[in-house]
Length: 228
Image 1: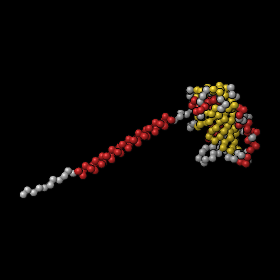
Image 2 (image 1 turned 180 degrees about the vertical axis):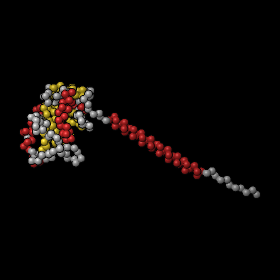
Image 3 (image 1 turned 60 degrees about the horizontal axis):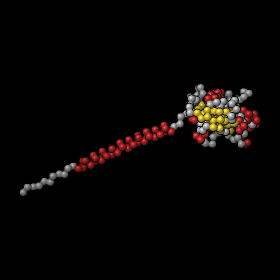
Image 4 (image 1 turned 45 degrees about the vertical axis):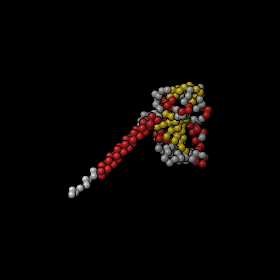
């Protein structure tokens, strides 16, 4: 009698793990490609939505009349989009980049243009209000400026005034400590421009270090739109 020896079946066990490895590798490559594509998409969207910093040579001006003065303001300077329209107005809110000579990193300065009748100049407030609210101590840290903290009991808690004591038309700015511990101290300076318009500047207290260049730099910007 012939003895029948059963033939061994094909080694299917060898193809199973190999196929699984190929599948896992394919999934990993697909996930990697999707991640790279998402990264490129996010970067592209951020590039599209990024608003360029205002510049002196910006175009697309809007014609607005404030206090009888016709101004031509680039659309990129406006702080609020709803103000970008031609015609008469009673207030203009702008944001420019302050980068005078010797300053490496530009800082934003918010500028609000108003009729003179709506605000009082900082230099006028120094004599009529601030001097009567100073505390005894004197602050330092800004060459050329005197820093005086305000009396907290009269509603000026956390505020200080910095001014040039040697000038008949002094540089004056009032600064306020921020409520958030990681926020920067903000300062406000109000001036009357030769054009008859008032300008309220709001800026980071670090700009006080270059205070002698501040008004000439503002003149460059505001002169460009005929506000000076």
